[in-house]
Length: 182
Image (cartoon, rainbow, N blue to C red):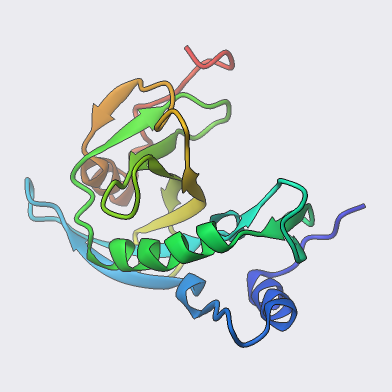
């Protein structure tokens, strides 16, 4: 039975396996204020980059690592390289545009294509009200990788920053989907 490991321990474990040639400092949780250009509202946001941004489920890529849920994944040099650029993007973006994609679950999964990092590089993330003192929104980057078909089934283009402002105000996202994704 897989065992969940706290992210800090997980990152240390991955760092030990990967060695000093592959620093994982870029996936450390960080926060920053974001300003909504429409309302001027400041949203203090926590960013958490998950291990699926530098690992892959495909067999044949070594070494083997465990993800946050204790599932076996493999180090992926391409995802690792792109995850470094992803951190830089998250530190600078204003999140004014994006897509909401209908995946099963109680919260929408947002999807963004970041062609500035690589063609068809897609980032998938969820946003929640933050439990951290002084922060309003918690953004978890669940996965990021190059897709052969782009971001997938697009439902609606949205201003991600607008949803952040709503979350800060305690308003849940308006994007709810039935289990069949319609």
